[in-house]
Length: 329
Image 1: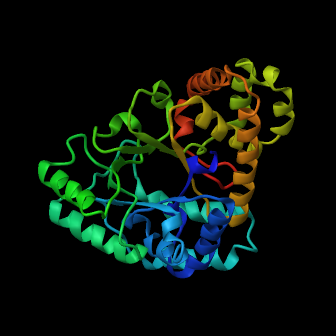
Image 2: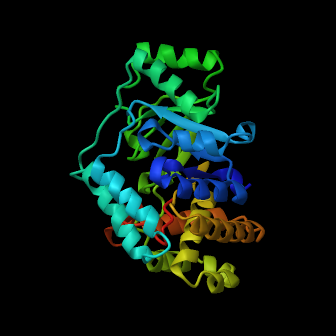
């Protein structure tokens, strides 16, 4: 049940100089039991998935998007990718994280700035065809509008999208964004969004997929919220197991899966070793909590999440900032 609700966000996977490492991460995800993979033309990872999942396409689910085109790295970006790849086994993790952050910084110049996708009906068709070729497949388990406006899709775009479903090319339609659930139009069967406080109220009938869960995670704050919710009193062994920030981040993942209406959480990393460690830790914690048999545990975790979201104005840290241990939810 746990692994069915975890997916790999593939924005950190890259072709070219970084593909060998990206393939190691992809292989680690498959070995861990992850079977849902989220990509997009703008991520640059569709071809990596196409090659890495060859031979097991029917065993996994792949979601891609339309609206934002792919981009070609400039010479500085390619050089940085080569440095990161060559020095991965030599540089401290902090230095590698800094290099990656420098690469991403120019993409958003202001916290309030956002881009929107182009959902021209003709472009949707051509984008899907290119994605199918890169993914080496004839069908998509989910096709999302990437960064839609509230007024999207237009009737013409919706007609094309529905045709793709009838033709068997897309099994489900959805909307996906780097922002929060309330920013998405009411379209499709799936809504993918950055996890934030508004999520806790639930009430959306679509399949909910969260990402960005562990960015800026403050483990000490969350530990206090878990304590105040009475969870450690009910399960004292749990407190002994979550003695470090990495384990606490795994507990946060379990809390969201148990205490909210989110159906799936995406995790993302550029380290195969960290992915294996995190998934193993989170799976063990999740199963331990579910086996406790407590009918109140969902309410207690929901209360802990509300506490964490509202503590000291730190709600925003759930959706922005650095990741813990190199694994971002």
